[in-house]
Image 1 (cartoon, rainbow, N blue to C red):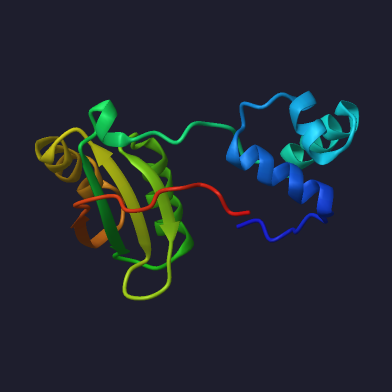
Image 2 (cartoon, rainbow, N blue to C red):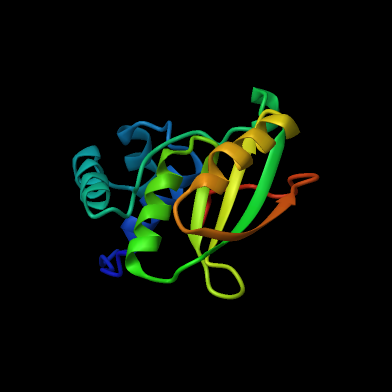
Length: 156
């Protein structure tokens, strides 16, 4: 986990908030909203991208409308708690397209995954043939999402 905090001023935060709400805006449109010229806005965005504050740009999709009708929160405990076990598990998770989010958590479980698949059958196939075969996997608990109440990427 990167704990290096970058210094952000009020204009940086305004730019981030604008981009977070609509990443399709042009540099010129963002500049007008924060009362700067396009050149410094472009520079600030590049600096925040290079520093990892902005990790990427994308659209928030409705999984069900693109044929991914099953959303599962899966909690995972590893059999062993050491760097090798964690490294191998994380490597496996990165290779699974079904896993759209993975968090290292504290508590009864070590990791929490958000998994999206087409159907219960495809989740079962993923669970049996991929996830349960991952190195060092121990206990799992699958929680099936009945409805999405709030889904956002907005933090500011």
